[in-house]
Image 1 (cartoon, one colour):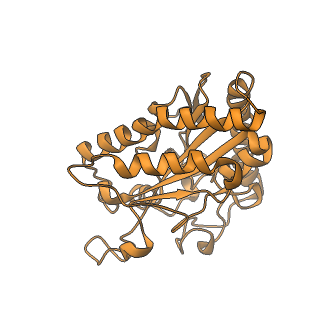
Image 2 (cartoon, one colour):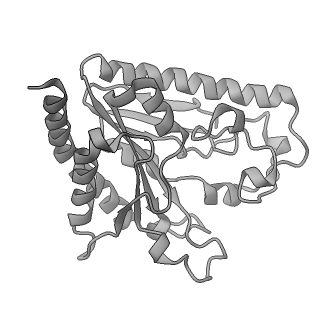
Length: 267
């Protein structure tokens, strides 16, 4: 069943949540060209991130697969063409005709128009705002039963701050990290580190480019420790706890945002 390319819930609070890789849908016009099966696509998508956006009232969710068009890459790289564009995967049976590529890029353009409209609504009532750019990442690339990637370079939660000015937004970032680290996750604490695996992709970069230091775009990447990345099966309790952990950060982040607001404006 087809659905809209993205779902946007407009709101007014200064914390916005986005899940640009949540989608799994593929348009009918692309399916004859697709060489990947559904499971192979799902492995590289970010399932469940759309649900996690419920922590905010402004929510931006992509419903279509990154294999149709990747909203977290620059426009010129948003449609994967070759295996080297996508972890060595053979995505297409044949080269995509240019008119097909342009169809997908038109969706990319419309997504960013819609996202800007939703963010502008928040920006119209707040001088500053925070964007949670939610993602997940794989750590069993060598196979379902292979040794996981070394935890030293693969934290359970990677906070990507490469697309914000830490001199301005350091307090907000630190509050977010501290809150996630202090959350009780099944009797233990999550391994939360900054810019170890990822620093943030194009969506966060676009937010910063469009809004400058009025925006604090934070890429939040959860390692897929809460699911089997090869089968797509997830632990429902872990999913709920991750959402609760994210929700626990919203009020403290809002308070830090107010302090930054007052410092910048001299209140």
